[in-house]
Image (tube, rainbow over all chains, first blue to last red; front, side, top):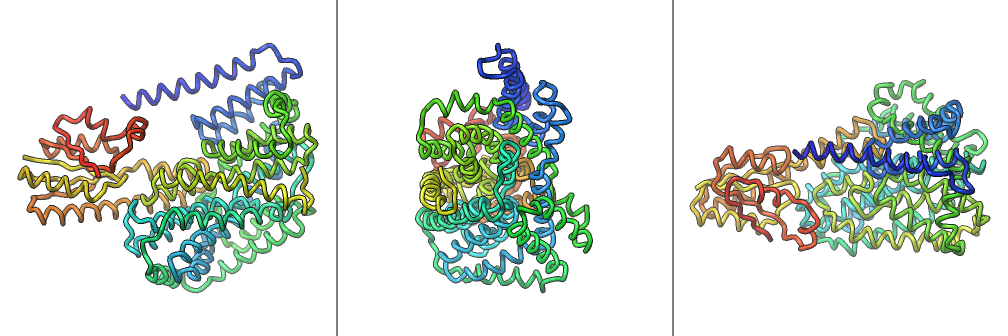
Length: 465
Length: 153
């Protein structure tokens, strides 16, 4: 009975999306919009509904959008499929393969344990370590992979300390710290979350402007550092530790390090290749191209036989290519047909906001949306509108890119918002109520910190609004 | 008299469990404590990692196994506590761990043990949570073929 009802609801969902598409596509074309723009809006709205409802996997919705654009006459098939070959997509692919090599070789776990054992002296320091270490790792590899890697370590710590699920406040702190660390660290570079290069890809496709690896870090890392400090004190305040002796955790970490054995030649070589890629992204990324560096690094992994194709297939989900390729094509269609400008004119631009209030509205909207839908979908939906708004206001489009991409990665409140939260919740130690309480306060503080940085720090590095 | 107590991965307060065991003792009943491991949570984590996180199958599967193993450990720990409580009050106890949907498996074990009463131990909920959330307990109150007792703490 339940299965039949679920199937009916799913079928009705598809019918609803199709009706919305048909309704928008069959309107008399509004003044100021072209027919192509109207069709782009229909495809955009249908994609948005599918991303929110998750009636289809995210990547399949993107693929559908890519096909729907030429079928609806928005652009030619050749143009739509060429957007799939965007540099950002190949950068994301390369970054995921490099991360796969780090995880498969065990080097990422070794680095995590190496740093974490330095924090095992007291309960407060252990929480700090569980926040800072995943954050640091998420600078250099996808935050979701970091959260998945940290889970068994956190689990072993809470079990070693005999903490009771849902009862132990320190147990809650352990899992929440690891999740928030990965989330906050994930916004610092292009490597922590693929939504960051996606935002750059949409920005570049629409305006020709881009943001370099170092430029991104310079703008975002100070916010990340402040948010880590805020998160640390909030975790300590919300989850008051009931234990004082965490020496067992230190022993567990030492045991894990011993089990890993000595650093292998393969690990050293993978570490060197990833390090060389990072240095190249920072120093020569702007001239050589981020994607080129990523792909060359991947080729080196194979030249030295450090990974096999089977390993890459096991550790990388190729849906990532479909998701981001389709999202970039959709963003380009919205911008090139002036549809994003049309929508922005009738929504946010009609409110006559000052630039500062405008950025606040964008940041708050992004944070609210990202609690409900995937952060990549939030970027795909908001970036075209953000670019139009920036043009109208005469604001540097990079500012709007940061205002959308950074908060889109900071979904603290709900377990279903993002994989790191879901992983923390699955431990059985953290309840939904725990996450909503601390997450809502952290979200409010994020808006304040982000705006303070934007207002007072960004002008120092040439970002004005 | 036969009583079945069902427990789940969501977690039950120890006080509610102890009250339930004392109730079985007062009725001089045989008690079967069945822990139903909810497989939907590990499966949802796997789905989140692959669909949203675009993490490959292997790390997703490893994480799913780690979560399932942790749920089994928590189940064994909870059943161990019930065993201690039952021993203290002299109740004959059978324990079992099963995996699957809470409502479906609860109805199966009620039939298997030919239970006269089904006991559910759960955390006390606010009226708002009760109104908003569709819970397995509410479904069982509607579907179970025997008397149901809910112990809250």
